[in-house]
Each structure stands twice: as C-alpha cells, then as structure tokens.
Image (cartoon, rainbow, N blue to C red; front, top):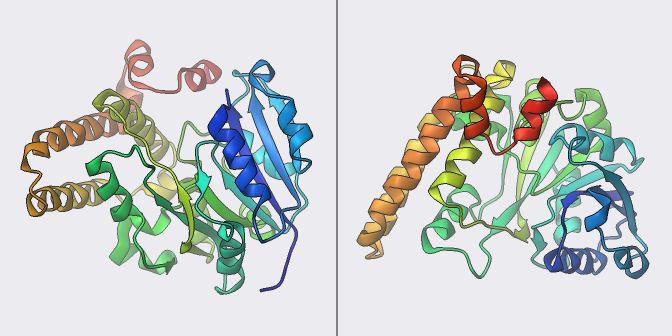
Length: 309
C-alpha cells in the first residue's frame, strides 16, 4: 500500500474522557496521519491540554448556531490539502492500530472508489438487540457498491457512515462535497451524489471502530424524523429508493433472531422501537405539511430550523 497524505476530521461538542481515548488511539495508528482537524462547537467545552498532548491536533471553534452536519464537515475539508480525508464522530473508538491504513487501502485497491466506510462494533454497554442491529448493518464481509446495485440493494446502495469513513479528496471536489445544509444524513446524501456520477462506495469490514447507542423510543423517533426530513430535501438521491423495505427487513430479521436465541420477552420492546422509528420517519418525510411547532417537537435539531427561518 502506498502512503499518501491523510487527515482526520472530527466535529466535536462537549468532548469528554471518551474523546481523549479517541485521540490517543488515532495517535497510535500504524498508518501515518498528517493532522487531526477538530471542528469544535463551543470553545468553553474544549480542553486545551489535548493540543499540547497531541501535536497532530488542529482545533477550530464555532458556535452552536453555526454548526451544521453538512457545512461544518465541508469547512473541515476546506482546511485540508490531504489526498485522503477521514471523517469520524467524537464517540467512535478505533478497534485497533490498523483502522486508518485499512480505510486508505480500501480506497486504493478498488477502482473508482470515492468513499470507504468502517465496520461499527458494539460497545461493552450495548444492549442485546442493538448488538444484532450492528451486525445487520455492518456484517463481517466487505463489499463494493455502485449505482447499478440499486436494483438489488435498494437504499443500502448509498449507505455510508461518517461515524468513520474515508474519502478520496479529488473525487470529493469533483462531486461537490457534502451538502451546504443538512439536518442529518450528509454522508448518504453525498454517497448518493457520488454513486450517480459513477464512483464506488466501499464497505471495509477490516476497518473497525467501536460505536453504538442505547436509544430510547423517543430518541429513535426524533432521529428518524430528521432522517425523513433529509430524504425529503434530497429527492435527487432518495426518490424512488424508499427506506421502508429495508426497515421491514430489519424488523423481521430481528424478531427471528429473538425467537432463535430465546429472547421472546424482548419482542414487545422491538415492536415499540420499530413503531417509534417508523412514526418519526413518516412524519419527517412529510414535514412540509406540518406546522412549525410540531416540527420543533419532533426534531432532534432545533437549531437547523431556526437557521432556515
């Protein structure tokens, strides 16, 4: 594998002890990282000692009102002249010292690859059913996806996660980068644009991070409302490629898994979680028909709507 200039870009908000472990593991990577660009929301929450401890760190502060899932990452990309841009979230933790090298290798070894995203493994505190969801979305086997796979893979063709994903910077520039304004889902929107221009999306199962959440039903509702909004705002990617089929497949597979493993008592919880997800998604897709006060009650991103006004 040839070594090319690679930067890591991480949006952060109120980073804590876990963020310190992330920086420590990035600095221990076998593949050389040029710099770690932190797009930090609210300077008062930043720990200055991280800059002294980790010389690769370059921090840029912004206000809460300035943050946007798309625009903040665009700004991070503009601050880099590296050949490879690796985007991560502050709650992702490299599973080993080969994470960055395996992502770069996935881009270099696959023709027309514009993006490569990592496998997400459950954290120690991950609930039983969420562990299965991780394995459903992030299986052991790698794959390469292009626009021609829409017929068989559907919405999964455009799946890519900025929890940990590497992008070829030159392809990124040609496609136009992340959307200027994105309530959520900026990674899939960009991946959709990229696939439609003939580039491939690589799922690199050997590039692994620990990342999982134990969301409540209401948190799932809010998250999926914003997911629905993001799809409604980008029909050029998602029109004619609905998410419902993939959601139903996950529910069926999850239920079968609970029965097979003797966790039948967890099925009602699966039902309520699934209902919350679908209700949020259904309303988000139709947000234009909703009054403003209801939108603000449904979203997990109130600042996004204030900026729109």
